[in-house]
Image: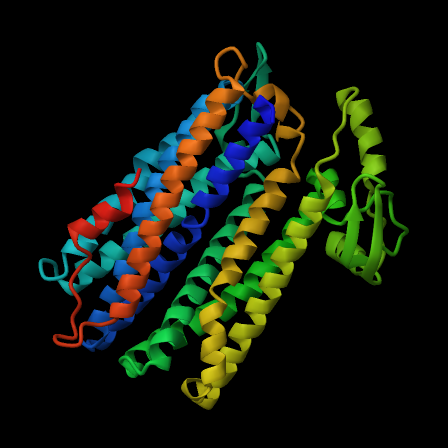
Length: 467
């Protein structure tokens, strides 16, 4: 594999691995804040150990997420120097705000919350966890502000071959940002809901403090259902936006080699052959793609060949077609996982109304295994987003091939060596994280005092020291 291929592989590995932890951090902070709000308002002291239980799992996830984020920054500086120089004047502002405001806010108040149970009043302690939740969402907002520029550049001018900001307001009102940010936040709430549902189901199956875990089960079911519905609605808005902002990505996501008729069908599944540029064994829903793209029953959707011809006229000779099969299948994996989650939480809420969910042991076992669904959906969504943008690293402005560091400064061997080191570090962190998650999940609530201790310094170090 050449230098560019290794750099792209390293970017993909670090980004997808880091994003395994980000949604849970955002979503679980929000759910814990709701739990503690109910605890403070009702004054029911039995809720405190349950909140601390979820807090320990949150802290483990947060610690690993921080380390993976730092390693991601390292690979940006090493592998993508030309890209960093190209967007540095624009990315500097949102990333500085994210680091100096959002990250410090969430990390500071995480400490206040974790160690302030018996040192702060209930209301001040509650304020701390809400500030953590707001900080995680704010952090996501600024990161996605930068990413949205890569998807749809706005508010810039070209000066000596680099993009320079001319309007910070344009970055904040980027149309891509306002479909990408809510979709990501809602997906985070859905991820945390299934995390809580899966572990609550595990505890209910073993009759560990059933009344407390019934409470977390109910909350996660309701938040999960609302999030599942809204994430599909916002995702639909994203698909509509793609028709104008990135028509090539939409065409690749549907494996449309040629422009459709006015009544475009949606491909439920097909065998995509990128070499012959044909789709086999297709299962289609008539008119559905027109509805997704235009919100009406008719409307042609541009095909890959037609968009390619337009891009050659606009950008010059070159191949502007992304890897079609990975984008197509990633899009469907995201949709099918999202649909499955909607069905599961809808049934969970139905059982809540009947007050029978604890009796459905087969359903609780199913929810234990359903924890994989949000991670599949999140990973597939980012693969579609980033691979579908190819061959651009900044859409329409800088190609991926021109964004990589020069081979003279960073060779293929250098990247291969760092990728091997990353794999070792990430593997060690995965072992540590899984060990800690299993340890504290199996431990449950302290059976002697009913009040589990805060996460120990030793365990925090174990989660992060593998870096």
